[in-house]
Image (cartoon, rainbow, N blue to C red; front, side, top):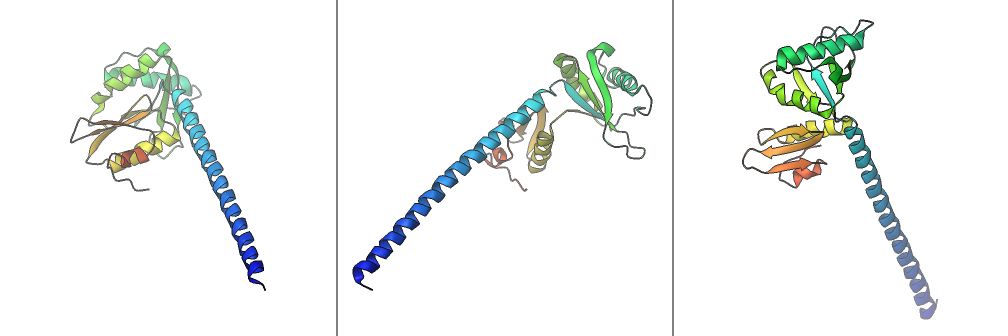
Length: 200
């Protein structure tokens, strides 16, 4: 084979290889755009779902006789009595849109109650009073989306002994024990940016 012909074959092969590399680069860029777009859509969907729960709370450790045919009515009364007796907060029956048990029955263990208030103000006054439950086996939490609940659990694990983790209107915050720094988290990677160890 002549030298010129060999050079021509090498040149064509190199050109084709470079074209393939260019195509791969274009595909990678498009894939990256798609993944970023998909992530934004997921975040927006999560935000919308969390917003739809902004007047909700979950109460753990309360007995509710949800086997009754008037389960919703019974749960509402349980919540009103709980707020008065345990929190010292006056919550009227008509402040509650609905209340019902969630989760599967587990022996004698009480199922959680989910409470949807008619106004955000009613939720806030209950959340502010939950400090009255310190030392008791009853807990009041915000009604978080599946993603935000997962993020909260991971954050608490990563910040154990290093910071105080809490939620406000579905947003997760971390306050460092060593400073006044307050971090709002949207993703777990946000913790790594603030030198918290994260294990998946």
